[in-house]
Length: 311
Ligand SMILES: [Zn+2]
Image (cartoon, rainbow, N blue to C red; front, side, top):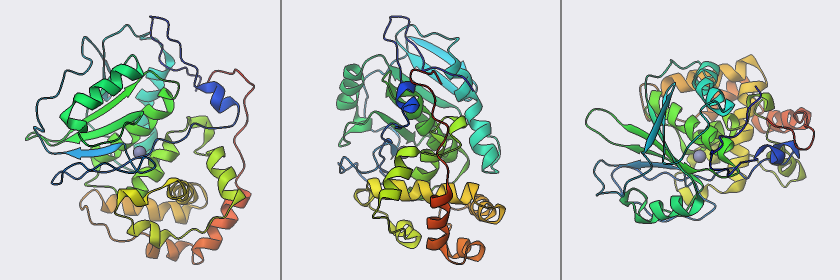
């Protein structure tokens, strides 16, 4: 779908797609999870910074953007500057729930995601520094936060109008959509799925940068190990790549492998302790690691668009 990043009428035009056109995808947003009961801890900058669960009433936060609000589909975009409401990125993001939940066999969500858009990185960073919601968390381009409320969790995305806006919004909104219909999502799978759907639909989930680095090696996949990761600091860039690779394998290699993932996600609709996935996947792909190697060897890079092409 042709699209462009949201543009501020004030003139700070964004051009993320040249990066994609060059075949070098943006560095994925890292993530971390801070569970509701525990205090937020600072994490390694290569950790998992963008999924945060907060208990309600963490303090009195400063006011995020809210002078203007645009409701589109499952989202309300809050901003203090003028936005081009006709920007095709709105339509693309509006289609994301159907794409994510439809492909994963999950029910439509009625959850509303509040998206707070800052016009500059400075204003965004200032807000993060002063808001109790982000106390102890490292600066990141974007965050997804669930806030516990009596009437149900509030889903919030915070980011700024940077060059990676499209990827970051797709990534964070994928987290939000998953968390709106599932009890919980294991850290590796949460990131693997967000890494898959952050890519524009025409990429078919193929991240050329991940693929290149994996093929360059060394690459030693170990799904059981990945599933044991609980500490956010353990989730480093190699783990992001491996998580993306397993998700791509399951979604694109065979109907049986996809069925395993879809069934696993159904389990997570009713429990936050789904158990390990690897034994289930092994029933479809007995030699897991070999299947992944073989699949990644055969996987084709997405079409490279001419330099300067708009996505
Ligand atoms: Zn993430």
